[in-house]
Image 1 (cartoon, rainbow, N blue to C red):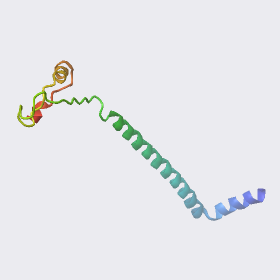
Image 2 (cartoon, one colour; image 1 turned 90 degrees about the vertical axis):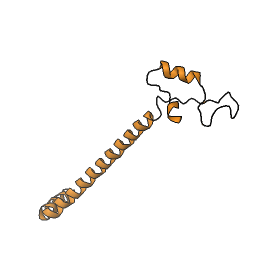
Image 3 (cartoon, one colour; image 1 turned 135 degrees about the horizontal axis):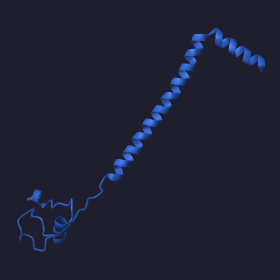
Image 4 (cartoon, rainbow, N blue to C red; image 1 turned 60 degrees about the vertical axis):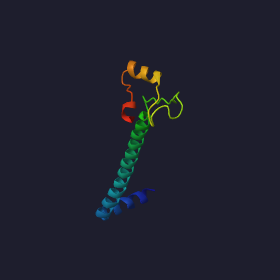
Length: 101
C-alpha cells in the first residue's frame, strides 16, 4: 500500500499540469452540478409560490335572469343582490358589470 501511495505522489509531481487540470475539471464539474441543482430548486420553489397565490381572493358569482327571454336587452347582466351587497360591504370587491354594458 505504501508503494502505491509513493508512486501516486511521484506521478502527481512529474505531471503537474495534467494533475492540476484533472483536479480543476473535477472541481468545476462538482460546482456546476451544485449550481444547477440550486437553480432548479429555486425555480421550483418560486413556481410553487406563484401557483399557491393563483386564484386566491377571487370569487365568481353566477346567476340567471328571472325574466323571460326577450324581456331584457341582449347581454344585459342579471340582478344579483348578494353580489351587489358583497361589492358594497367588502373591501377589495368590485362590481364588474360596468365593463359588460
